[in-house]
Picture 1 (tube, rainbow, N blue to C red):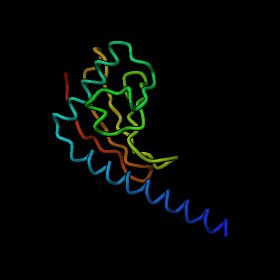
Picture 2 (tube, rainbow, N blue to C red; picture 1 turned 30 degrees about the horizontal axis):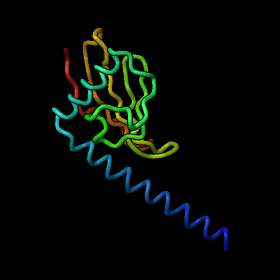
Picture 3 (cartoon, rainbow, N blue to C red; picture 1 turned 180 degrees about the vertical axis):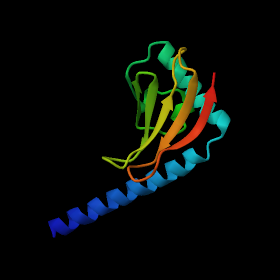
Picture 4 (cartoon, rainbow, N blue to C red; picture 1 turned 135 degrees about the vertical axis):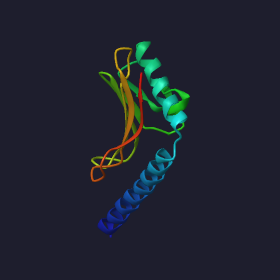
Length: 125
């Protein structure tokens, strides 16, 4: 009986994560160019002012907080926004081209291991 309960609980948790992942992915794909530009600008400003390498969800700027992320990591001239998912089925927004020396800025959606990455927004300086 315990095994059956454990299996059912695991299935319910995975199903809940999958729905959350699908909803957040759809919401991200519907962001306007100005919303995406605002996300990029807010993370660019944080990077320029010396943000910590990792931000928890309560530390992110309002433009990013609307995505309800699990966290943000800065890596070189990029930021990775962990939006949803677990283990190898995570949804990320890669915010590239942060910093003054970068000539091209972009935001790329990675909606899980099996889906191709999608450029949502790109702008040259």
